[in-house]
Image (cartoon, rainbow, N blue to C red):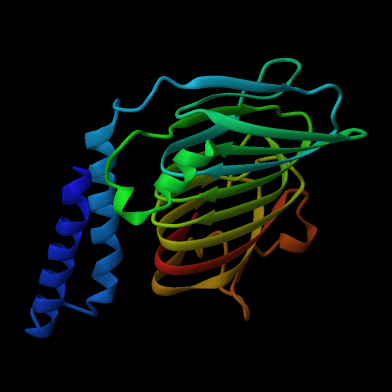
Length: 263
């Protein structure tokens, strides 16, 4: 599949612009381009599923930490993050392709970097390798007690972040050609969310009872916000009770090509 992936994408893109030149497509051809790329990428992930190496387990002890900053540097494959770490664990996960872990403690604060092994990360960042090879699927569970600042740097990936039970004060997602689904924290107080994406589909779920203020733009594609919950304001979208809400999310979105849905 890896040898066929980009040739098939190029054929599909060429056919798309040919149809556009003849006036046979509704709208602009660029609006059709990013879904084509994501469809081919998704098919390639399905075809290579199960071909990767056995995952390795890694964890870090909590040791009374009150706060932590965790940086996930993930290449391609599936990245799943949720609550459910052990009683005295900051995190516990299974990492396809191996993991390089760096951990620094400063009093009751911990800085953690989780990165795919250097040779795998570099290999997966090359576009011509997105359609095949060995997967880097990660399944990670985090502690629900400390305050968390989470940073996700992903490539061509399927990212699923269920943060509903976590105390996340900062969330940063930087992603390339990917599908990203995020459930924000339900009871974390104030959460700052920054989404930066390339050719991506991003779906953000704001739990009931959480107010939101949404700013940003999508270059080519769409920003679809549930205006029943987050009415349009002068600078974006905002819950009527945002300023007084106990639990609220400040969301900033910058996307190149793709779709961003917030509900």
